[in-house]
Amino acid sequence: MRTHYCGDINETLIDQTVTFCGWVHRRRDHGGVIFLDVRDREGLVQVVFDPDTAEAFNTADSVRSEYVLQITGRVRARPEGTTNANMKTGLIEVLGKEIVVLNKAQTPPFPLDGYSDVGEDIRLKYRYMDMRRPEMQEKLRFRSKVTSGVRNYLDANGFLDIETPILTRATPEGARDYLVPSRTHEGSFFALPQSPQLFKQLLMVSGFDRYYQIAKCFRDEDLRADRQPEFTQIDIEASFIDEDTIMGLTQDMIKGIFQKELGVDLGSFPRMPFSEAMSKYGSDKPDMRIPMEIVDVEEFLQEIDFKVFAAPAKDPKCRVAALKVPGGAELSRKQIDDYTKFVSIYGAKGLAWIKVNEIEKGVEGLQSPIIKFIGDENTMKIMAKLEAKNGDIVFFGADKTKVVCDALGALRVKLGEDLNMYTSEWAALWVVDFPMFEENDDGSITALHHPFTAPSCTPEELEANPLAALSRAYDMVLNGCELGGGSIRIHDQSMQQAVFRCLGISEEEQHEKFGFLLDALKFGCPPHGGLAFGLDRLIMLMTGATSIREVIAFPKTQSAACVMTKAPGEVSNAQLRDLHIKLREKPKAAE
Ligand code: ASP
Image (tube, rainbow, N blue to C red; front, side):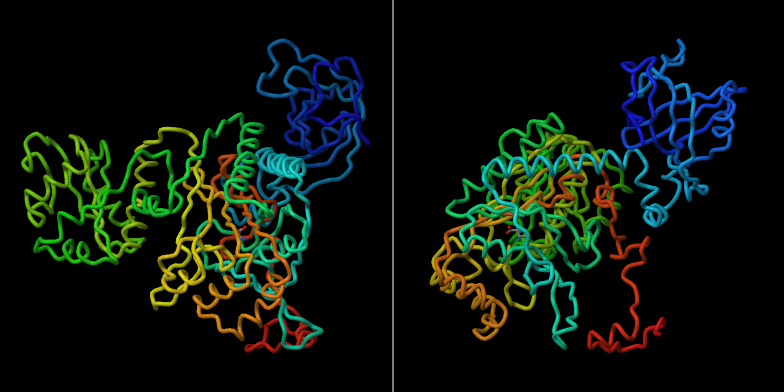
């Protein structure tokens, strides 16, 4: 139907006749001449119809936005003064000779270049229209380039692309499962995979040695900002490797993609222990573009009368820490109040501060509502430890360790952004030496990564003191986002059972839920490990998109629904009966 894409018609084709197809982007009537901008995935081309070719002219006159056309015409240079350097096709135009309306279009629900005036719901309801926008086309093409780069790299390094089931059993990654009722097994349910974790490990037992998959994963998580119930992972596993091999391979893959697609050299990826990340940055995914560190100040506050600081300073489960913000003394009362509100989201009950005006004058040169509680001497010792300078503000957090880390960690990132403190555009690192487990509020423990991660100690040491054990997990972090994470796995049955015991999973439950894994570990499982990258987040970072919804063709809304297909939807009673399901409340649309 066509000889060229619209966006590919350029000055090399001058005087040639071309045929192309596309959508009417804009139509202009310039005193007897009609201009159409016709768009396809490669770009726009300007077509001119003059009244000499009466039939084509009349058709061109009748078309409206988003009509689908086939046009044949002659390429010519644009008249001097009318060229457009910003357009790929800006030096030429096509003199239209024939035009066929392949399909009409109703008035679009929103003008493509006026998309920002309509809400996201409208854009998602008419996603197929939204995706006609060049920006959306660009993002999804970029995504395709990245996945093809990933495949090329992994193929070249001997990884095999193997698919794993979508209808499966629960794979614990810490979220709720999406369940699918079985028709043939009354009362039983499949779970959609939270990740292909156990299957990729079993592929190692089978001897495939290196596996990858660009895999859909499903997690029914609480509504947190910018998560999708189904998302895509670049899932990787390899045998007979250690941390250095798999981290090196995947680091080279990510570096290669940044270099090729963005011309960015991500440099070296330093490794940082989890404990350092938490203590200095309050986060296991520190944004290293921001040159600020959180500093512990308990040692100066244990003996004071002021309980708000003294009590947590003495409690080993608590933390009292300070964040020094260069230039922050300029913050107004109102801004400080706003930051106080901000940290309250993370559970902080307040945000104490000291402004450093003239440090050479001692406490006289400081301004703060809390010095009278801390005492002059302690205050100056804290200032000395922080190496506070004129113009700084120091914020304090005093609470349970988690609250202080979360609050000061988030405040650090927010201030870094608000005060534009970035020292580089990109900052990548590996976070390593994670604890194997974390303690829940009720005293029970959960695996920090997942229960198949190898601890760095023996099974005996692990069971003697689970909360002290570290794991062989690693996360790749870029600009404060977790790009990917993984671990060396347990390949030994007794170690796997020790981990299950630590998690309070009874022998019976172990066999019921993970019997196939425990069996496989008995039949010659090689040492292995791997990791998974979040593809959506990677593309979001690389394209500078503000949400992962912008880089997914058909995303769900924040309430995990699709406004276009209206999924999830009700089903008929007959279907429910087939599935052996009776709803508690009668569905409204029952047949
Ligand atoms: N399965 C893990 C996850 O989805 C990644 C891995 O350990 O490879 O986070």
